[in-house]
Amino acid sequence: METIFEYAQSLVYTLLGLMPSPHQRSSLEALLGLFLQAQGQAIPAHCTSKSASALSRFLNRYDWSTVGVIRATRRAMLNQVLRHLPPGMTTLKVILDLTTLPKCGKFAHLATSLPSEVGDDSATVQTDPWVRVLNGKRGLHLVMLYLVIGQWRVPWSFCIWHGKG
Image 1 (cartoon, rainbow, N blue to C red):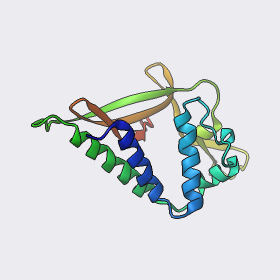
Image 2 (image 1 turned 60 degrees about the vertical axis):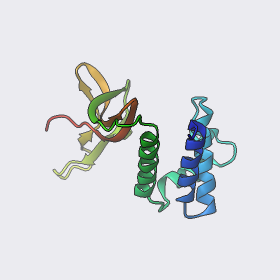
Image 3 (image 1 turned 135 degrees about the horizontal axis):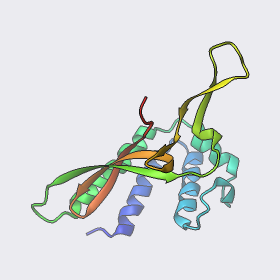
């Protein structure tokens, strides 16, 4: 039986193998290192092995397949879950959950502002604000889809809740 460390290591190697160049592989390694340090400082500026601008370019501009990374991660999660299921347990439960990431203050980057169509360039209209109030909670509301198999609860997909209208 594979330990959790061996499983995580094989997943990381699979994701690194999806990167098309050595530079992209080293950038992904640097980002994973920031997340795995668990110091609460996953900001690219805190990285000691890569510059913040190199990590920003990696996250914004490269052509690596996001779909390929998602598929590889999902495949690895499902294989791990299925390997550790007790014999005969095949029940799959699907849970939809509305999760709120609370926000205080103003977040200009979480609202799309476009010029109004009247012709006045100074007027802007918020067409798609992501920070909303729902049930008295102000924040970014995510609809999460979880798969539950045995004791495993795997986040599978999400979308941003936009509210009515």
